[in-house]
Length: 520
Ligand code: MCA
Ligand code: AMP
Image 1: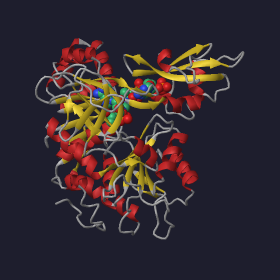
Image 2 (image 1 turned 90 degrees about the vertical axis):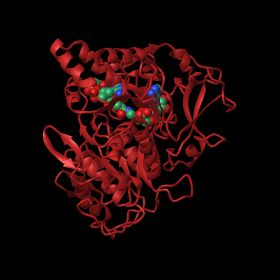
Image 3 (image 1 turned 135 degrees about the vertical axis):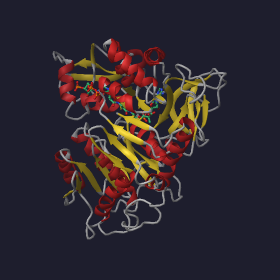
């Protein structure tokens, strides 16, 4: 029994989602979130904290009925309580990032049209303005001990007539999350994930990776993407395990490994860990290696884990990182084995419940050893892009499989290797998916820029290094600094170019389209 059963007006459908049943059904005195510098938070306390937040969101209504609620909170127990509250109230959580600029937040708020946004103290000013401007609503701000609720619905307020988010199937599949991710067409899209789809991801990973209630996860990933939110945080909570949140700093992470059993990261984080290890004192190295050896599991995903990095980490710690593959729209699809050999440069075999075909241009399966595009069938698949049924429909092939846009090859051992992406306009920097077109659209506005093409140049730290290839206007000059300064008002820092190439012209095909493969 958790402490406050029944204090929320029950919504029958939403309180019965597998995610809530699982998390709120954990023993109330079990620790959910801990930190050496603050009191531990139990599952019971999380449930209790979520209760008043859910009531505020509901404002007397029986349910939010699938309306979305923004979450702009730093990783920590308040984030988890707020997330649970949104679900208990029957809402769809839209995690937001404090590193996003006002225009980026504006795009998300406009698309998601949240009924309310829960904002952490100190993060309120920008979003309050954005909400007020974009949602055109009177704001009711209620300050809780640590969080503020912006734009909360009041019972007599006129309801938004946009209605609940559309669903791919007519079936009653309540949505749990709207996660924003870049696509090939400019601005990020809102990926709608159902409670059942997220639960399918968690079930699959619990089986494949043997999550246990006594696991202790160290989470330094951001919580507004699938990796940090679903694979790491919810993976732990699904098992009744506990999580410690930290911001990423290599030395602190090495120290903190002492007290955990599972660590999940993007390759850039492992690069930083290995670099820090290389310059550490011999005492530190001995200590850090001993910490790392005691972990049950290290995983990597979101971008390719280079084989030399896997080897360097193994040499330092004796641990072979488990590499897996996923995508916001499809959840987790492929994984190296928990038991048995993990193959460097490979993302392994399909996770439980997932079907993968590798197909040619005619959508016919290719033979083992032949490259093709990965297509996915899975109970984890998304409900659709919010407000964009056309893109949703276009993301499936005639056989009803999701088109990943990732190319790969299956070996005779059944293990799949990824070879790259079908689109040159999708980049991955430090695990973040970036749209070259979104960056070009902003930087093209710089007065010195006549033409621009953004490409990802292979980089040992970031995966893809965002590189701006620019043709200047007559007599104009520009520096990388100036271009970054110009783009910084509109784009999050991780989207800004790290390199500038000034060219006299851009290579184009007969249709006038820039030949980015040639540029690369
Ligand atoms: C930070 N910077 C970056 C990036 N991150 N630049 C390019 N790419 C990045 N990813 C910028 C900062 O803004 C700063 O710019 C400068 O680099 C140095 O900042 P620093 O503090 O050193 O970086 P950091 O804040 O420590 O960030 C590095 C990071 C971070 C911790 C690796 O990028 C990160 O958390 N990445 C995880 C992304 C993620 O979770 N992706 C999952 C997507 P300036 O000098 O101008 O201030 S979900 C997914 O991909 C699927 C589902 C899957 O399979 O998982
Ligand atoms: P996102 O849209 O942010 O969810 O990113 C999904 C994309 O990340 C996939 O389509 C892949 O291109 C990439 N990705 C995820 N995991 C891996 C991996 N282990 N190796 C290479 N690329 C990966």
